[in-house]
Amino acid sequence: MTRQSLQLELAERPTGEIVPGKTFRQRQVAAPTEADLRDGQLLLECLYVSFDPAMRGWLDDRRSYVPPVQIGEVMRALTVSRVLASRSAKARAGDVVTAPMGIREVGVVAEDQVEPAPAALQQAGGGGKVTDMLGVFGLTGMTAYFGMTRIGEPKAGDTVVVSAAAGATGSVAAQIAKIAGARVIGTAGSDEKCRWLKEELGLDVALNYKDPDFKAKFKEATPNFIDVFFDNVGGEQLDMALGRANTYARFVMCGGISQYNAESKSGPTRNFFNVITQRIKMQGFIVFDYAKEYPVAIAQIGQWLGEGKLKRKETIIKGGIASSDEAFKQLFTGGNMGKLLVEVKNPEEVSRL
Ligand SMILES: NC(=O)c1ccc[n+]([C@@H]2O[C@H](COP(=O)([O-])OP(=O)(O)OC[C@H]3O[C@@H](n4cnc5c(N)ncnc54)[C@H](OP(=O)(O)O)[C@@H]3O)[C@@H](O)[C@H]2O)c1
Image 1 (cartoon, rainbow, N blue to C red):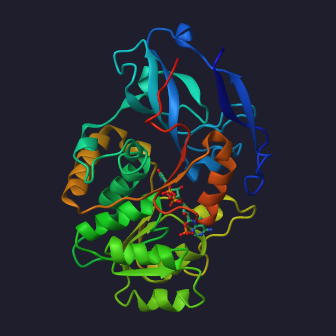
Image 2: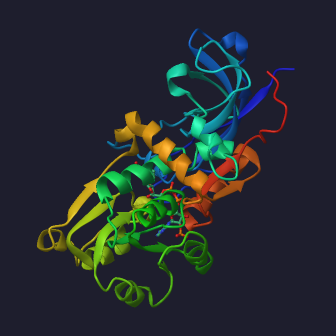
Image 3: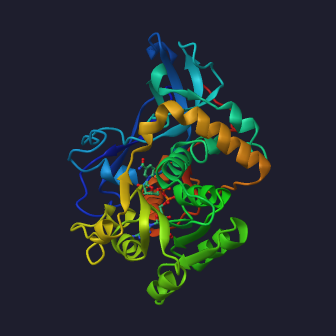
């Protein structure tokens, strides 16, 4: 019997939040087979899909750093996948790789899109897991590393604030600042997340931004002002950080998740001119800017994991591609701690072509 492959296609562009059952359509198609492969291609089956806030931006038809996903196309996503068949020297049948295969169970991918598991996976504390290839060794780990080390450049004694600090990027960025000897404050959306940040990751202060006293606590926690702000959230928290910025502060503009679903965007207003008065350096970046240097970051992160200096967490939603709507919901309502993934197939299960 022909193998079927479930895929998630963009059905219509959302104006605000992704609408379950409406924005995307699930469709069963005949899975490609080894016979469909040309030279330089690999047949992959998805094990885990990475869910990233950036995916919301890819649905809007406007100029960005990648073209928008078109209506009817398979939703773009990075995956950890197993090679079912290969006509490439890059990986063999049975290997586990990362590839931007999109949200589908089986697909054909060109070899230049495929990354084999890094050697650093073996060094990681507690034994590296294939899911780390989408987390600490994946784009969120790379984002945290390059954003913090190249733009934030924290020094011992600096005050560093990281927003969405219990997320995949934020949790790694905050720990890198701790390793650099900074005093680190994280913000997150629940007391449970704040406990994890303080008790397990060793942050100096963790603040729940839903706390009615958040603004007062934020001010209290930054008596010497902020030297580095690693922003994942934008909006009100960015404005607050500008209000508490030290002279010559570095603002690492990583993301602005509080604005991704907003139909009318709001940004820093009251405190924006502190950029001038406090001579703040505010720099945006896209992780791909550092692609050539990923091996450096992967080796360093692998070493920190092995030494127990860096910890990571993941939130895995089981239920396959059918649970994509649930994953998008959790991402934008703070359901995840650490890296958010959907398990499409347990790696222990036997694969067939
Ligand atoms: N520049 C780049 O190249 C690059 C690359 C990767 C990621 N990013 C950006 O980095 C940020 C984090 O991405 P990630 O993949 O690591 O996701 P993540 O932080 O693991 O997950 C998103 C988190 O954002 C928080 N959040 C959601 N809505 C919010 C709101 N309205 N206000 C405040 N917090 C909100 C939630 O946690 P709470 O419970 O704390 O609300 C949620 O868990 C995003 O802005 C993303 O776009 C940038």
